[in-house]
Amino acid sequence: MTEQRIALVTGGNRGIGFEICRQLAKLGIRVILGSRDSSKGAVAAREIAGERLPVEMRELDVADEESIRECMRWIRREIGRLDILVNNAGIMVEEGEANPEHEVQIIRDTMQTNVYGPLFLSRLATPIMKSRRYGRIVNLSSGMGSLSEMGAGYIAYRMSKAALNVVTRVLAAETEGMGILINSVDPGWVKTGMGGRTASRSVEKGAETPVWLATLPDTGPTGGFFRDRKPIAW
Ligand SMILES: NC(=O)c1ccc[n+]([C@@H]2O[C@H](COP(=O)([O-])OP(=O)(O)OC[C@H]3O[C@@H](n4cnc5c(N)ncnc54)[C@H](OP(=O)(O)O)[C@@H]3O)[C@@H](O)[C@H]2O)c1
Image (cartoon, rainbow, N blue to C red; front, side, top):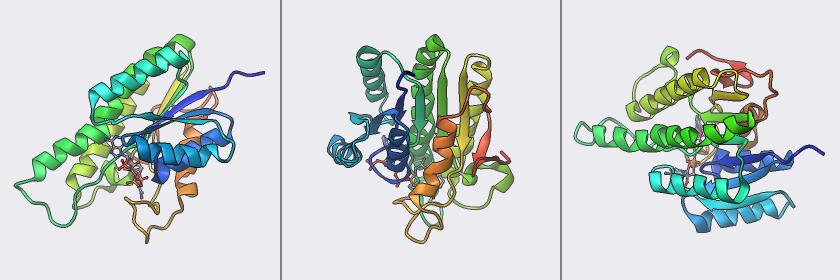
């Protein structure tokens, strides 16, 4: 029998992250559903567990380094391995025209959640992955962070996703040949709290390519940016 893989998904309590948890668990992967609010996380995990799927909730605020440390300490101590990390948690707090008085603070806050958290988590996860020569890291990026598609507005969000793509490229280069595959994904425009009700895609569709990247075979790509399982321009 093959060993059960372990996945950590950040922001798993709702939206695309919740659906990624469900789809990974359906593949028989033991999913740790990270949620910054443990009561919301518990409700979400219960819903997935109700389908007789392997999921458990851990409190994890990716904007808080101590919370990240504590979650990774728990994984090392209680499980001793981590095969898959999905950096899904993200914020987009800007709306309307930029306000110069608040802009830089909004950028700092957005970078903390969308870039520094995923970077720190990945830094703590890769040594565990290296020790078993197996790892998949999926960074939920966005077409809004693509330099070749860059448009007006949402400067904090766009900067954060472009920077997250840098994290993907640098860590992929640093882990080449170690059995670790690290990729960015644009899930498309998805009906969630962030995407809104008029978005064109279901969460099921939005989770599809992240789950594909989380379960790539050893011969799969690393250091890429994907939408609908196809490479897209940075
Ligand atoms: N929806 C789209 O159209 C779209 C398009 C491109 C990319 N994306 C990306 O896909 C990812 C998921 O988006 P979504 O649409 O599912 O967003 P969402 O519905 O707004 O959900 C965001 C999730 O992130 C969590 N989160 C936010 N800050 C956190 C923190 N500091 N620590 C832990 N969790 C935190 C939220 O937790 P709470 O419930 O506690 O707030 C929630 O679970 C994001 O990275 C987003 O940028 C989305």
